Image 1 (cartoon, rainbow, N blue to C red):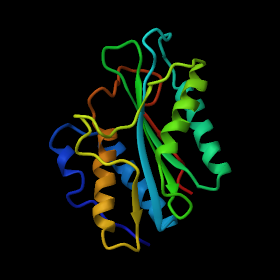
Image 2 (image 1 turned 120 degrees about the horizontal axis):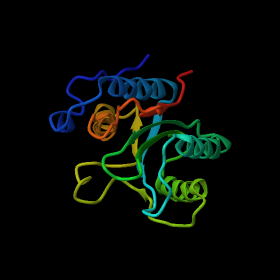
Image 3 (image 1 turned 180 degrees about the vertical axis):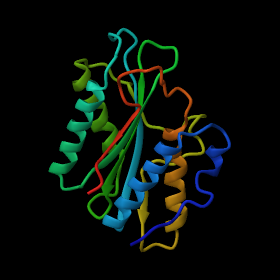
Image 4 (image 1 turned 90 degrees about the vertical axis):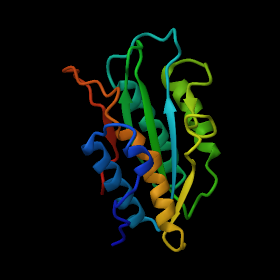
Length: 195
């Protein structure tokens, strides 16, 4: 069994927001499970948003459909995909989703195709051809401290640094802010079953 443990991981973000401890624990469980299963794991995070004129969204049917499509795509490629998503909504008519996918790093190293596939599959799920609704979570002012497409390789000396970078990146999914809980009938997060 391999485990990096939690220690001070995510410390850059942990002081910034209040966190949902259950979601954070599930992120760690998913990550540890996956890197025990695959000694190399590619982790890619992105955000999914809705076009402004899209009908209000009141269920998780759309994210469930998208998840099924992207997981099926990467399963067909033999990449053993696992995922986690969270739903957030503040004052807008639409929620947005933070999504992370883990892929077998022995079979894939480049990650930009994940964004291309996510864009195509999200548009298909929404029934539109509008682009720009998938955000890459890197390279702008808000995400400047994040890397994306991080490879965790247990055979490398920097495995703990890579693991901590992924946890810092994914800990954002566990922030309590904008996780509505007003007796809503939908869940705020979903993830792969660990088996």
